[in-house]
Length: 248
Image 1 (cartoon, rainbow, N blue to C red):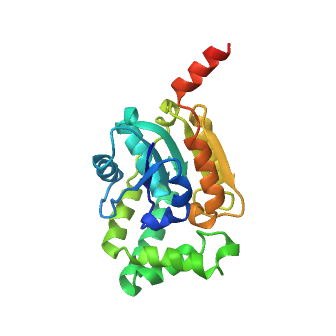
Image 2: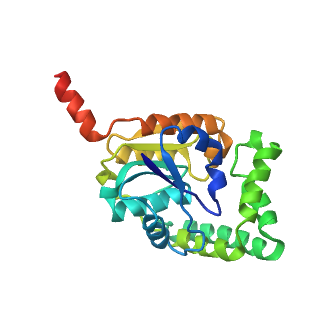
């Protein structure tokens, strides 16, 4: 099985690295690269251009939104779908949407003035579980990853997220085996948001990882890998139907 992994905002292969050794026992893994694209559509097209004919698809954070764009465009190529620490709604109108825009642009201004690493020090504080903020290995891995990007990459990805489309109507049309996963303490992409997604996607599986924030694959790699392996090993719909008929 081919597994295409989609990183989130300012992330790269490092966000998936802690779980790759476990996943690679069951799947041929590829991490997409679209860091300079300025729309989710462009990111989806970039990922599709390098993907095999059919594949399993897992996206973290912004990567989950890219995954939904891929499903919107080419559902027949997606054998199974995993949405991690992500969302499905457009930027809200009115005050809430303007507040989101202001928060994102304030971080961009900090990145331009003081550098990507200093910006990441502020960004990471609400994004990992409070108990992990003193974990130097984890925090340095996140800071190193963000420092590999530039303010121009950050600006492009902010533009993509601020103009994100709403995927509410898409979710009930998804028919492949689907996992919806998030950290139990994720304050940005909340457990409630994931419960809503799982309720809209037929026959999806919901996993809440305890003592975990937004950076689930890096914070709790064993729990995330276990959930993804269970998802990878779910028989495809045709196989499940055949088994039911044989067992009848």
